[in-house]
Image (tube, rainbow, N blue to C red):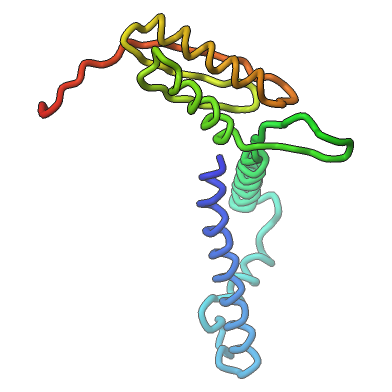
Length: 182
């Protein structure tokens, strides 16, 4: 959701900037008398005003625009609410002090120690405030899984986490290396 928010924010900002520039151009044209015809300089404001004055609030197009605006607003609100940071809380060293870390940092710390375990040859770790998932591979998948679980448990026990995340460890045998074959 954060990626979607990062894409939507510049697009909405650009639309607002274009609308503001358009209003500035139209107001300047009205003050100087350049757009004195039946329409504005770039946008037919006077025609739109006449149409809006003759259209009822219960007309189909007005209801469709209102529903579309409500749906777009709801989607933007949902994206903004779901794009919050998902930090991992650590225990506070003193009252009134909040300590957090990013899930990526927790994954790096766990991954470093899991990869250093003897039977593990490769590992990937994903972490959140609620769960840590380790995918370890080694010459023997059960030994790699056990070694990864031991190392990850030791790391999680050693960190001052406010709430210990659930640990999931999956083991897989090493893939056969096929060097030079594509």
